[in-house]
Length: 219
Image 1 (cartoon, one colour):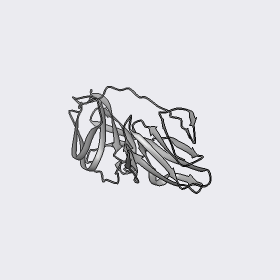
Image 2 (image 1 turned 45 degrees about the vertical axis):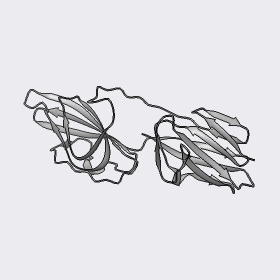
Image 3 (image 1 turned 90 degrees about the horizontal axis):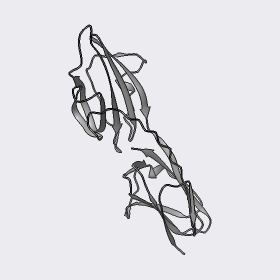
């Protein structure tokens, strides 16, 4: 017997022969940004403070140089700005910058987390002729996992948000074979999903209750 269940985010939903539980916690930070979306960043990346004081960049390849322009300069000048650097679902890139900085928290550019889907928040302050920096956050924003319990062979379709789903590290109990799909196409690697995409979780060949716990991270 096989059933199909389609759901969106909910605290707890059960129907027929499949049960799904998930919770999502969201944090929203508003800032005046240079642009309205994550801009791809690779190669030489130049950030112009005349465009804004908050920059959203998604690292899609090696960054060979990160630099700033139009920084207020002089003994009576000061400014602050922030860079949010998100790593795409591939990750593992290299990063370089020759900007002269005084790190106030003991961190350096070498402490950036360049793993897939990690987010780094770096705050900068210009005081007179010196630029200070602090790495406010580095790492992945982990969301509560999707928990699916199969009482019989079934297909569950979960409507996702903007997130990365870590399929290879899903945990399974029971004897069923569990496979995954993105919008009806087989998915086996860590995969990025947009809001409204469908994560298919398919259980087959089971003779006892089978459950999976699927890790996911914010994009």
